[in-house]
Amino acid sequence: MLEGKLALVAGVANRRSIAWAIAQALHAAGARCAFTYQGERLEKTVRELAASVDSDVVVPCDVRSDADLDRAFGEVAAGLGGLDILVHAIAFAQAHDLQGRFVDTARDDFWLALDVSAYSLTAMARRAEPLMAARGGGSIVTMTYLGGERAVPRYNVMGVAKAALESSVRYLAADLGPANIRVNAVSAGPVRTLAARSIPGFATMEEMVAERSPLKRNIDAADVAKTAVYLLDAENVTGTIAYVDAGYHAMGM
Ligand code: NAD
Image (cartoon, rainbow, N blue to C red; front, side):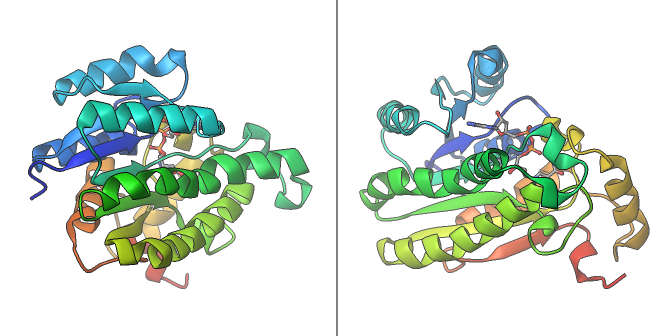
């Protein structure tokens, strides 16, 4: 489906990462992947995973740093020979902000969550634009959660960041559409990953989905990857959010 496409996958921390499931699905669809990772701690794991999908384009990138982003996009473009696809699966909030009350969020912690989890999409899209435009267009996908639309207990500032991320998807789609670059998001139900484990009450989120969603079950990272690949491939779909949550978002109670 994506034979010969050149993809940058940002957000692999380990084999449970949603980004890793997407990378595997991209590889299976014929795309060639490059990876960015955050910090030396993750390098070995990400290099090993990348090798298993025949990739050796693996570069560090902390999305809080413009210099890092510039260098990483340069290295990825050189390593792949261009860019058609960007997968953004990055988020962070201080652990203490994912408990207690949202109203108590400190200014610095608010900006940190919004910077890493929302602004980073725009920062990456801006750097991807000329590379994708040079190849006649491209496609970007990011990851969001229902907590961006509804007040989900303890999701707190991450919900506000997801709201900003979802709005960014629409504005980026409007800006980049004329260059034939599409921007979409997957709104995933709970998936057991490193980031998810830092949300207190995560098990309750899973229980609620199993009990109340129309399909009465949870989803996994491979389900998210399937929809991400669909969005990356769907040539007339942009500015949209696709729910992969067993239908949970459709329910009122
Ligand atoms: P994960 O912990 O595997 O991935 C999060 C990634 O963000 C990690 O690779 C981490 O290194 C990266 N990251 C954090 N701060 C960074 C920074 N400053 N610079 C560069 N990278 C940074 O967890 P995941 O669940 O796979 O998360 C991926 C995305 O999916 C996130 O946006 C998350 O909010 C979203 N999501 C997850 C779930 C879920 O239940 N797991 C549900 C809906 C949406």
